[in-house]
Length: 200
Image 1 (cartoon, rainbow, N blue to C red):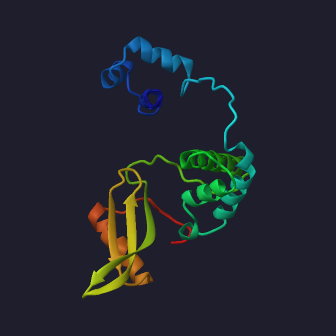
Image 2 (cartoon, rainbow, N blue to C red):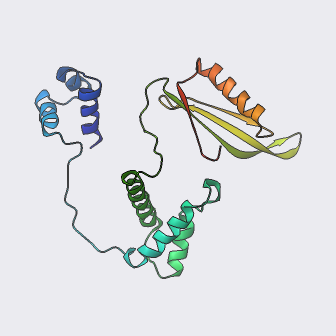
Image 3 (tube, rainbow, N blue to C red):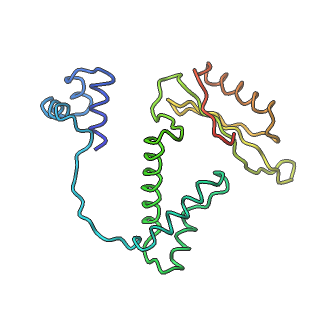
């Protein structure tokens, strides 16, 4: 299915000729023409409706997920916790089923926010040099025989995913500026814009 998206990107965005797309993908030119003419991004398969073991617990799980979204990212629980809570209520399915439900719930919530004009969404594709992403995390290291808490700056190019990670003792403006300065020196330039986590 991903190949269809690749074909469309090569033809529509990169403006490659069908001969070149055929060479790169190994598909025949007729097959490529057929996919492009159909205008289909992904083939559609009919999935029969089957009841899920999770159905009786869906409302409760959705409520928990909604509560989790109001917390900061560092305070949110992993999905193993809601799975264990559901098992205590009689759920007999796997953690993977809970994770799949959570993915679908988040995707639906994101669609709702987009259609109602609420929420901010970052595109998943970027031009070279268009953007960088920055965030902080916390970690520990043994320095001079003592366990020391570190503030770790992450700066990453959005297109190539090249990144730099640098640890500091404090999360101050000086450290923030230093992390950016060192990152841009490593990257060889400054991207057009920066994308920051709301908590950074």
